[in-house]
Image (cartoon, rainbow, N blue to C red; front, side):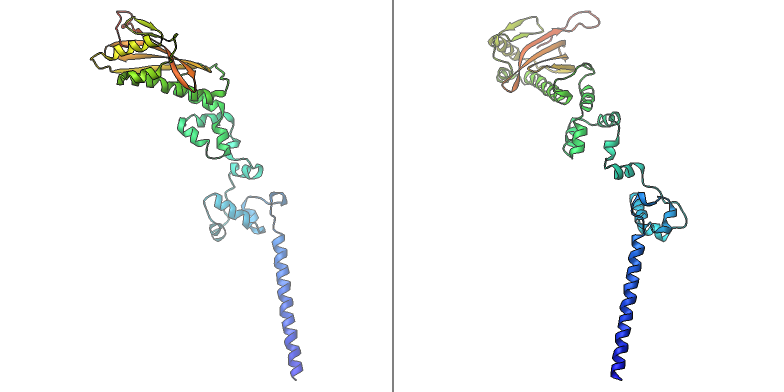
Length: 293
């Protein structure tokens, strides 16, 4: 009696394990039959829902701002939105949306950035660095920040380096006028190149040659009692490898003048070697106005 009961129990357990193994095998077979890529007959429309395409629906819903539950729980025959073309292309080719843009569009988009923003963009990742270092982007930024002239110029080291050099010489030129406002003789001595060929033409008509004579002329100018208030406009620069010149218009409380400054690059910095200020005729030549400088 006990043997019969034991035999029945063993038989029942074996049947349970056999049923479990059969169900497990059947479940695996169904899983393997689901298409896993576009080459196995998968389509992105709603018809694939009935063929086990749940994984793709879930991805599509996520990319379009939805969730998997909204797709399977509330599906009533609507067409599921397809994956955006740019995202699909990125998945297939491995190229980002930025890489798929034509160069003209990329350059136009980057033209809205200023100098600091373009530099920060180049430090984000390799793709952004490549886009931010594009020569056409820096040429567009140069024309926006400085001048539309020199359009036919082809800088030896590219437009990015030329932009940086122009920005540097613009800052040096601005320092010159700050020295005049502060009336600092010591700063003016440091600003000029100590050479016998430097020249300074003041608006008064006097000119001086040689370092000592030039610094002496500025010392006399700074001894004037009246304050100097001026505004600089229409600043344009041309930069070479070791020399640069800047032209501008100066509007002072005593009059207006055309100014040209010439610089040379020595020992890692820019020095002034020539300054020329001429009076500007007012009202089409009605008469000159004398300015300081």
